Length: 148
Image (cartoon, rainbow, N blue to C red; front, side, top):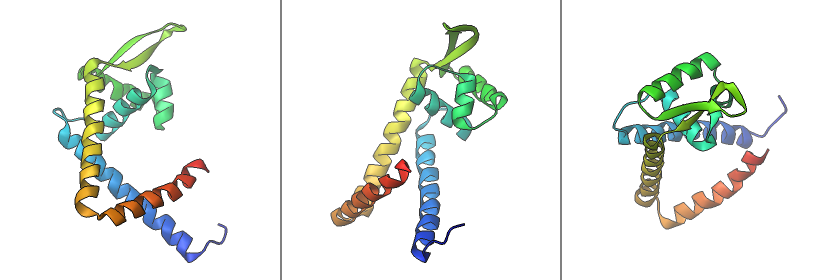
């Protein structure tokens, strides 16, 4: 591993820990808003379908970094909940495209809104205006990491 400064190593470690905790908390907020309970993998797959639109199960598995068999199980559960629909792929009749149903779209939108509201209220309640401005500046700097 190349030599890095103590501050770079600490920033990397602390960012990973804080990011993981924040992501976990945001997921909890979304789960608390749900009427029906989905597993984390089901929630993640539902959001993925919402983000990518019509996609094959294998494409979703690849995007999620899971085995196709695992994605098939996850999609079957989402189908039982009435959150996705499968239609024949017009380019290859052997495959099916997965899309969200109206209930699926509503659930994804409700989850997104619950997470955004929780986060905005947390910033409003726990940070001063100056601290929020500091966070915004830090986010502008962190944006560089997403373009590596």
